[in-house]
Length: 268
Ligand code: ADP
Ligand code: MG
Image (cartoon, rainbow, N blue to C red; front, side, top):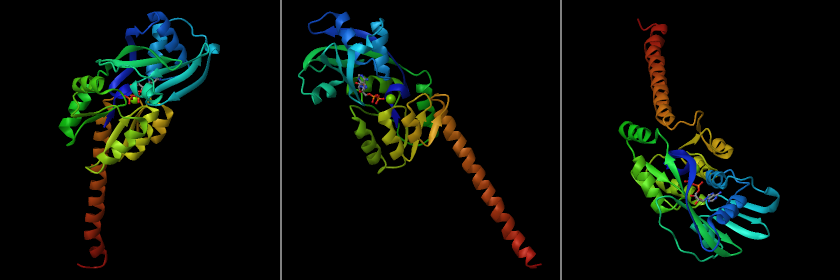
């Protein structure tokens, strides 16, 4: 099971489209960037990069990050929400759900829908190779698990070559998805984010991307120090070689003793 953002994809988003309801594009971006100014999420970085100017952090307060949803903050005396469909739904703010192959970020100001921004993220260069290799060398099913919306997830999943896509999963949902997948067999999970940590713990083997968040690294059994996805197959090869070595050692230990002990006891 692979997480999407930051695991299968670079986690480097660029702003593609800005659709304000009433304000200008620049103003919507300014609001979003300020609300995100304390976040380390790749989406926050994209919005801050696109804004380009220095944010006035002293104008921003009451920042709350909701993993898997987005952020809420007060900027310039207004309560701002920046996040996915579920975030606005949670705050009961009516808006239209936008269909896009990119990730759609919705913005609300003082409980009113203010517009959306579409950002996109590229697949990691070694993602396709890694998935194809795992498909060939390990029997099993490759699943992509993400908090992002269904449509974006399907597009990225098809590009990467996974067998199945589970999208729109809220943070605590990732762990229960892993729990139910475990009823069907052994599960290894690869992830990078705060919201992946419970799922990494729940899986038979949790693998964290080294450049990911500390909490994911703490929760994992295996950490890919160089953050290369192709080190997932390398870890599989290494563990198989280790196991083979253990079996060989056990064989020689027992084989030797089966002969050696009777000999020492004076069989001949
Ligand atoms: P993934 O599960 O693919 O790694 P995340 O769990 O980090 O992705 O995020 C899932 C979704 O939650 C994102 O696609 C986005 O819609 C929303 N989200 C999370 N954090 C933020 C944020 N700081 N700003 C805006 N949206 C966010
Ligand atoms: Mg992630």
